[in-house]
Image (cartoon, rainbow, N blue to C red):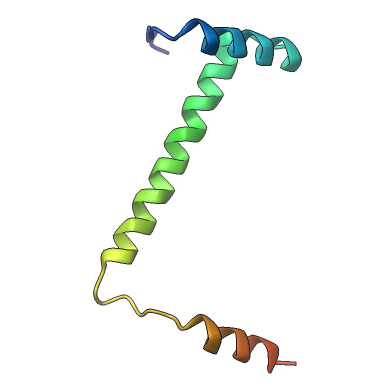
Length: 73
């Protein structure tokens, strides 16, 4: 693993310490998990935006989808 240093506002560090205490883990663990989740969410969002911008991707009509789902029983 490699070390990364970041400057955070005091209020964020206070929240970080509080969260780490509640989770009974270290600051490092909380920061690592937060960054991992952020990056996963960013990747998912990037894929979603690419799909929305793809003119070849079909657009679904919510009303039609809803009717088809409700009529499928």
